[in-house]
Length: 324
Image (cartoon, rainbow, N blue to C red; front, top):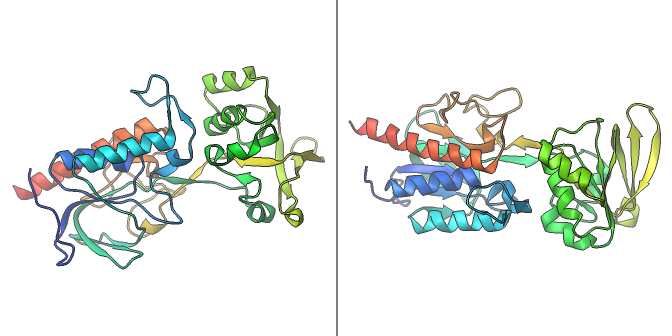
């Protein structure tokens, strides 16, 4: 199927508008562009981060095609360049409103640009969860971080803490162990949720230690303008203790970035967009969702990319059926 690019001045509907630019969005862009659908990728702008979670991920060792691994930002840069080379157009702005009640769909950005789309692919991903402590907010960027790749350099030969028990937490800990003198993983339970290989890697790392059954109730010291330690509450003994550290990295999971679509698309109680099992179809014909925005189980870059491929192919089929 061949179509022409969109005249944004007259508001001529585009064939495909992709909202989001992580692995799902960029893969969808590659496939849609190769199908001559001339997709527009509204990739996000400040304070959002174009490229998704991989932009704050260190070594990616499980994405096929990179025998020696690749840094997350490098992988996303390669995917973006590939999408642009085959014809995808990018807009570095945030979407502030959508109307999926009738076609063509209406999409508006924070720079008051308006677009109409015959199909839309939602790939807005998910964002890191925080502990929710006032001291955490006060010390963000002053020893509190959610990005080892971004901030690990500042903690060379220092002792740091990673909070969490999943793959992300252990990946962050292993990465930080290359620079920090010691990494302590604080976890609310006495077992980890991470994959076996990640657990074994952490247990085998002499620079990684564990504090079990504990929650952080306070980060010290906002008055000093830097992290000096934590108050740990043992959930089994009900005792509090002070744990000295100079940095804390939060890795306790993610929340889907779907607030924009509330009231427009069907969602589950956690806020993930509901799609047809095994397919990226939402409850609105012509609107597709791919990647972590609808994935409650796998949450991997490769599965996000695969669902982005599916979304683009389904959008192409949708448009072809409409033309016949």
